[in-house]
Amino acid sequence: MNAPDPTRDRSGPPALQRATLAMAGVLNAGGPLLRLALRNVARHRGRTTMTLAAIAFGVASLILTGGFVRDIYAQLGEALIHSQTGHLQLMRNGYYESGTRSPERYRIDDVAGLERSIGALPQVEDVMARVAFAGLLNNGRTDWAIVGEGVEPDKEARLGSYMRIVAGRQLRDGDREGVLVGAGVAAALGLAPGRRVTLLVNSAEAGMNTIDLEVVGVFQSFSKDFDARAIRITRAAATDLLASPGANTLVVSLRDTADTDDVAAALRKRFGVAPFEVLTWKRLNDFYDKTVALYDHQFGVLQLIILGMVLLSVANSVNMTVFERLGEFGTMRALGNRTRDVVRLVIVEAGCLGVIGATIGVALGVALALVISAIGIPMPPPPNANLGYTAHVRVVPWVVATAFLVGIIGSLLAAIWPARRVARRDLAEALQANI
Image (cartoon, rainbow, N blue to C red; front, side, top):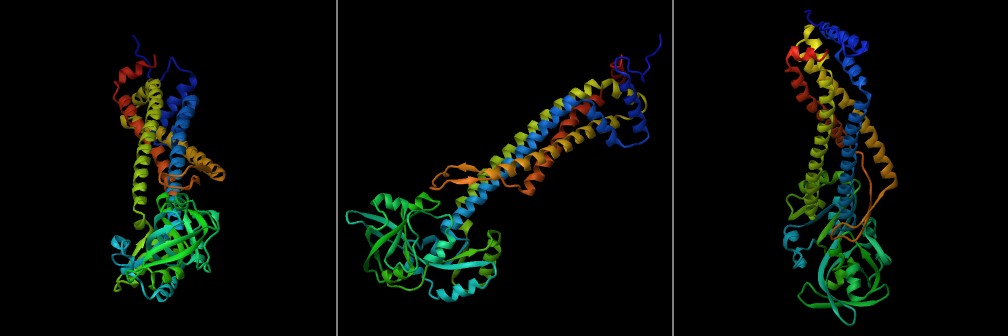
């Protein structure tokens, strides 16, 4: 009985026989493995197309999700900065922790000198002083506890691009008897522009002072809690009302939010020997970092899910392809190729799928991100917020790079197990697949 010819595939077409012999010759000669892997990938067009679609879908999903989450971070930060806190605040030590109960104990006296010193930094766009106070606002029938700010209205209007005037107009520098009230305060007291109110506060000398004011506008900021208690009057009116000069905080507005940490470090160095502290907008809004941590964990879980999806899809495709080509790999080994050559060929083929699929996914994800951003996604107000916003999908380079690597790494990992399984098959058993 004649032994079967290991170079002949009786069940396959002549093209497969030629490809098998060519593959063995290329591997024995140390030829271009990548070219051979690409040729093998192209042989199974239907299965290859489905695998590439799964990889591309996973990569594009990571780009879109990551860009959407990064847009949430950016818009939340800008809303906090441009509706309440500014980029930085300078205040006396201890004011942030305990000064709200007795702000008169934490006055900054040389406001003009500090404003000039801080404003000299090239990254600084504007510096404005705020005077804090608490009291009661009366509409003629009932009182409402408020927290107030004496502000420089024209500067605040430039900073507060995320503060919406829902009725009336902005407070102006010349409004010595004007008051801007939060939407919650207006709803509680039934206030509208043109209504008169009386403000009662404790002065610096522990006496009671009152002032009659006219509502010039109603505002909505990012925070519903802030709007439920906040009012604003001019700094000049607050100084007269409290019978005390100075300010409690200096709010710093920057040209670029990315400069926040650098400017904070410069100010801390400049005022290191003075009784001041410099707080960034993140420190003033500690829930921001908690929100970022929450979304980062969720995004990490999503990455793992998509990585698993890519692994399963590629593993299924590679597993089916490998066992259909069992006779081919047996022929390679019979012609003198080592087991590691078979493993390497399978992994390179999977790597080719990963690179092609990830490239398609990056192109698709970036294109969809640009289209979606051009249209915008209307979003409702977040929890404890008043204002909705229009979301976009940002193209973030490191997110794109991570998604690309996930597509490639997932494909390579998925090929290891099928490649090792076929390499461990008995040579005689593998050759029988040719019969």
